[in-house]
Image (cartoon, rainbow, N blue to C red; front, side, top):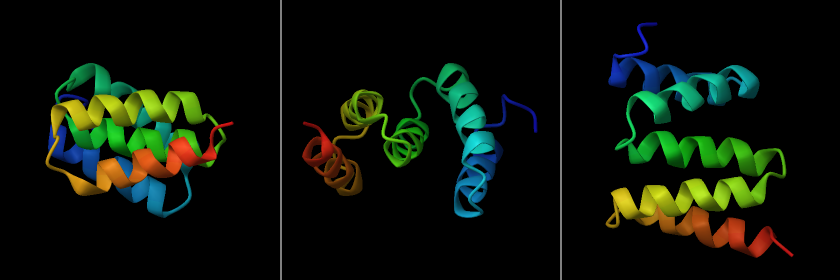
Amino acid sequence: IDGKDRAAALGTGFCLMEMGQDADALELFDEAVKDFPDAAEAFCNRAILFSRTGRHAEAEADLRRAAALAPGEPQTWNNLGEVLGKQD
């Protein structure tokens, strides 16, 4: 995948997540947030992967970034609440 194709990168990352290939998806989303720093979806999806592996502080940071980029996206706020609830 051409790392500069936003739709392809985000779509592929999401498909990898759904197939349980979290390590590959995380690698792709790491690149996506660098290539597309305004892509709230990339931050939100990477946060889901961080949360799945207990990396809640990193998930929180990504969700806060996603919320700042797209404050009208309710799923981001819901995910942030869930991550905050998992932290000690």
